[in-house]
View 1 (cartoon, rainbow, N blue to C red):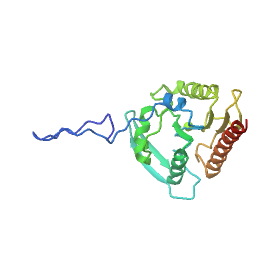
View 2: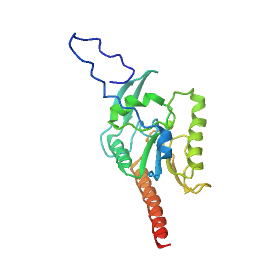
View 3: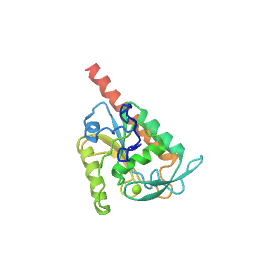
View 4: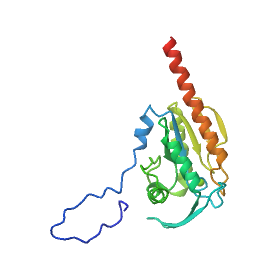
Length: 211
Ligand SMILES: [Mg+2]
């Protein structure tokens, strides 16, 4: 049950209210950004990244009608990609963060895709469409300025870069084709990027030990 759904009005005189534990609040993005045990923040857009009409994965495709507070949407995705992203998030030095215009309405999609625990939302509120690009860029600029290494997957706004930011973090920006979303080759690039960042961290640790 989602937080904003009406609770059942059914009640009996002797029953005790049991807290609804099916809704768990996602971690705050601020907390994730401040967590220095995280080496790589992976930002994922939804439309054109996970929700894509013709996924390029060698697996079945799922289609579902999703109702949110703002309307009804047809969502198409590859369960194989969902699994791949979940595995990225299981890496102890990696955190996945939603960077999407879906705002709080990402929760029904997380339910659909089984993303529990929920992922932090870099943009927690619904914004007018015209304000979304600037809001996304502001998040990425902030992450870069903090010297953090990041991956940004967005079919309209991400660059196509794999380099070092002016603040010293590493960045990988992936702009998938909107109709395909993220493809297997993109996931391979992300794993390669994570390995590079983590290896750099290890080298620094070795140097510190030697010094
Ligand atoms: Mg998009």
